[in-house]
Each structure stands twice: as C-alpha cells, then as structure tokens.
Length: 146
Image (cartoon, rainbow, N blue to C red; front, side):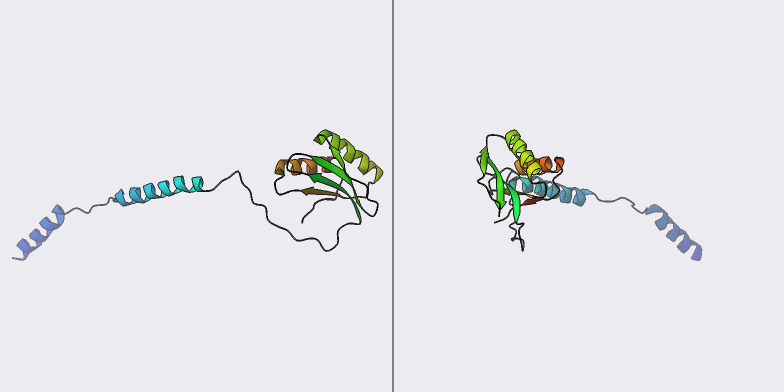
C-alpha cells in the first residue's frame, strides 16, 4: 500500500510542471497609457514663451556706468549714466553700438556696463551684448532691473 501511495504521488508530481513565464499583457497596457500621456503633455505648453523672473534692485547701484538700452522694436541706445551723465544716443544697429561702446570704454575704462532691456526684448540681443562687452575686456557687466 505504501508503494502504491508513493508511486501515485510521484505520478501526480511528475505530470504537473511549474510555469516560469511572465504575463506581459498588463505591462504593455501600462506602457501604452504612459506613451499617450507623454505625447499629449508637451503640446499643452508653449516652448517659445519664456517668463523671466522678477528681481529686486541691488542695494547700491554704481555711481557712473555705461548704460545700453534694448527696446522691443530692436532700437539700441547707449550713454553714460550717473554723476557724469550724458544723453543716450540711439544707434542704428549692433555694430555701431559696439563701436560706440568701445569708444566709451576707452574713455572710461573703470565704468561698468549696465544692460537694460524690456520684457519684450530678445534674449539673444542681451546675450550678444554681454559677450561683446566681455571680449572688449569689460569685467563688470550687469543687467538692470525695474
């Protein structure tokens, strides 16, 4: 009797095999939902609009400085501000403004440069002017805030 019981156990154990596979159907469903979410999300925001943060004024602005004003329509003005102020001159293009900046820097090498732009001004114009100022050897270049 013991032999028939043990052979019956062996027979039932041998006929049942363990499954060692993963059911991937739920994972595919989750991946498709995530794919749809990531395809829809980027279209909801506008990448061409960048909202720049507002900054507070520094405690003490420099006494005299060279100010460059960038207007939204592309107009550029440059002049000395502070105690020895003169009226800002409007320049027709960036090359003329860089030449005027070079002359002002040669006349006043200790003056820092302050770049003032409107909210609607192009970011590229500001960066290009900072780069040109650094190439001239002007170490103190700042951005004016309102």
